[in-house]
Image (cartoon, rainbow, N blue to C red; front, side):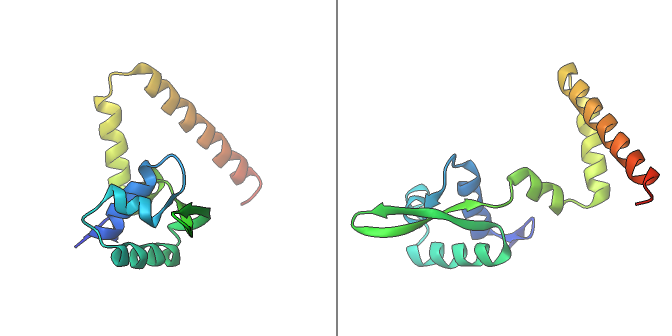
Length: 128
């Protein structure tokens, strides 16, 4: 079953990577999700690389072996935004605005909207 275009295992590993503050190895993913096999983790990491979700961030040592570390290329919020249809994004934003009680967040959103409108006007004036 796919969630937001990712399989269950892909979502599980991406969530581990998104929640990590630093690049992590397959072994560290195994420690975070011991129900996964090493083989499954390796296969999913390779697929996520192919799909452009993650990249090799560097190398570390586990015991005496050199291992690759991985980090996400796309943030969780970017992935969710891309996964939602335009209409769903609009409805989600409208619902959030209607329900929030935090005026600072609303001020920040208003500022972002004004900046985006200014950018769009500039692009229109340049004929883009």
